[in-house]
Amino acid sequence: MATQRKQPAGAKALTGSDEAKRKAAVFLEAIGGLRTTQSASEELGIAVVRYYVLETRMLQAMIDALEPKARGRKRSLDLELAQLRDENTRLEREVMRLQALYRVTQRAVGVKEAKPVRKTKGKKKTRRVRRQSRGERILKDLRREASRAEAVPANVPRDPQPSQQGGA
Image (tube, rainbow, N blue to C red):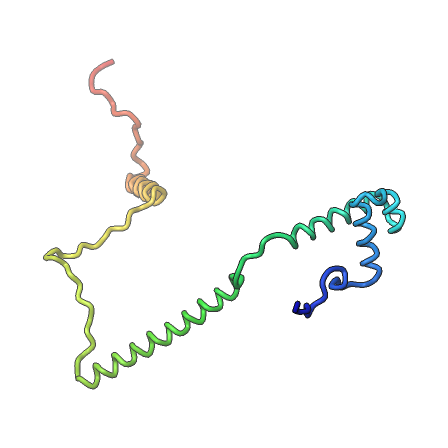
């Protein structure tokens, strides 16, 4: 005995208004060669250019419906982001809980909080001198030149070239 289908198949399974079904039938007749595109556009009451636009949309929808679908659940980036945020919150709470437990245990045992030990390997740390930028060096040189110029008395004439002691 053959089992009956629970859902209708074929044209009976299609949903939509009667007008949309009639228009689909006109498109299929034109694609199948039963009528010309001109008569189909006249039947639908649209221009031939608009007919081709709608035909292309219909064919694209058909191709999209026939594309193979990925199996299983679709991976949602929003869902994955929410899960990662929840995990992050849970882990932060866990860290705070473990830190509190560590402090309580230290107090109960009577151990002072351990300070991190820095290894120096016998060398003293030297203070790092900040490098001056090129502009800072030029400014420093200009200020030094200006202070030298102020130190020279105003009544002494400046000789750009040293005088030669021989006769000319």
